[in-house]
Length: 318
Image (cartoon, rainbow, N blue to C red; front, side):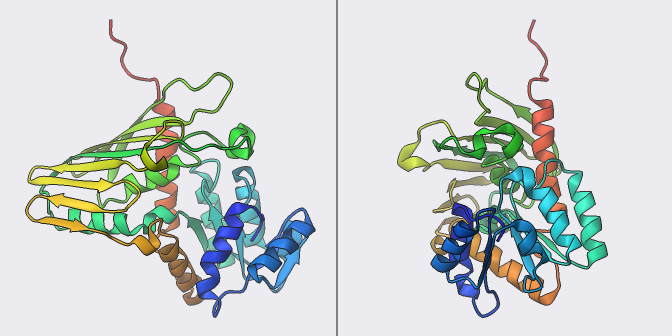
């Protein structure tokens, strides 16, 4: 693991269930920090630089868990050293960077996995199945509410040159992936950006979606609006034959349509990390692609870019 912050500690705990297949080592620009996490997580080695870890013959897979501005550089370095790569989101500065990474990975015969856990959320998997089964008929509207209050604490997320962007790059890209993986094909998006606080990155965005199947969607994402229970919120999918109401985080799903059902999709893996790491371990041990391919991850970043490019471009009212 390159980077020994909060995410590295969390991922180390999540990978503990795969200890028969995976042993962990940690790298930081501060060797003492890497050693402290190694001891705490039961790791095998600690490295005092990212380059040292990447060059180690004991390392098979490199997890890039640094601030986003280093993701592309470290991913390419790891591939050049013959390692598989797990890269945190937002993965790279631009969608076209995926083309470079994919080409380098193909030449190296290695895989790059984007750590987008929302793709594996049990609630999203269930929604995909429900929509595929036509439980609400033709889908008309998708309204996803991803509003909460979350403090960044003045860390790298508040620095544009380190974070790569604002609302849609850090927390919002999760929800972009959610909207893009409901089982319908996104064909067009339009971004809407409220005025940010003076001198700060924006923390709120809205995106309109057109789907090839005829539905339209709206995603509202924010880290600066107080909400019940620090993030409890409701979202809805409306069809010609009924409605799906769901708690946005994935606690429950209520179907009122061709059949009336109440589901609790998977509280033990609410955020999808268990499914994500199980898929990654399977993929790199079998030498196959994960369910979340680079093509899907590239599309998420392309949607983010398109949303920012279209924000503020609507027709003025005269």
